[in-house]
Every structure is written in structure tokens, then in C-alpha cells.
Amino acid sequence: QVQLVESGGGLVQAGGSLRLSCAASGRIFSSSAMGWFRQAPGKEREFVAAISWSGGTIYLADSVKGRFTISRDNAKNTAFLQMNSLKPEDTAVYYCAARSLGAATIHSSDFRSWGQGTQVTVSS
Image (tube, rainbow, N blue to C red; front, side, top):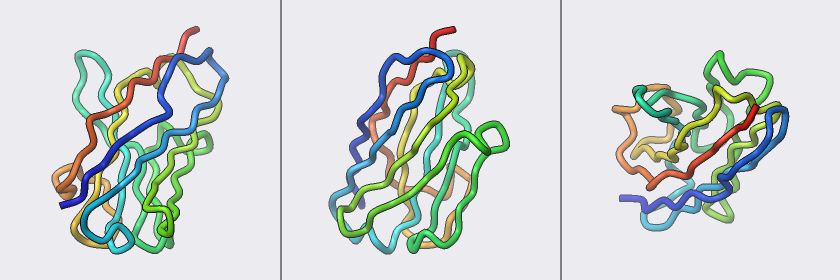
């Protein structure tokens, strides 16, 4: 099991940027695919981005392509979500997740470990 702690959320104006971090501890981070999901009030949790254990495979939701990037630093056991050109519709609680396998996937059911989430609020 991987323990995950997100940070970097906050309030930002539309068009601004935030960088979310996900610090991992526990089992081997470097062999785990990582993902970011988000949940807005009254909506289901949705996929945002995923990265394989090596960083060689990346998936991004269509709604964030060209604005968000996902990356990881295996030496620091940390995954990142860089969010640029933020829109009010990006407002949500953002969750970091880890798989027990190294292949990236867009399905939340494939991820075994989850963080507590960090709030991102984008004002218009």
C-alpha cells in the first residue's frame, strides 16, 4: 500500500496556474503508475491525468489537454500536476492515486491507493 499526501491546491483566478504535488511513502513508488482525478460538487469523480512508472506513457483527459501536464520524480517519491490556463470549471477536489502496477490507466477502479484530496478553486 502506498500512502499519498496531496498539496498545492488553493484559490486562483481564471487564467492562472497551480502546481499540485503528491508525496508518496510506503511500498515502492517508482514501480507504481500514478494518476490524478477530480470531483466537483454534485458530480462524479473524473479522470484528469495518469503517468506510467517510468513516465514514458501519459494520458490526459480531453478537457485538460494543452493546459495540464503530469510528471513524476521517482528519486523524490513525488508526482506532480501542473495546471495552467485554469478555468472556473476546473474547480474541484483533486485526488492523487497510485496503482499496484506500473502501467498507466484512466480508470479509477485500477488505482488502489488514494490521497485525501486538495481543493482547487478557480474564480471567474
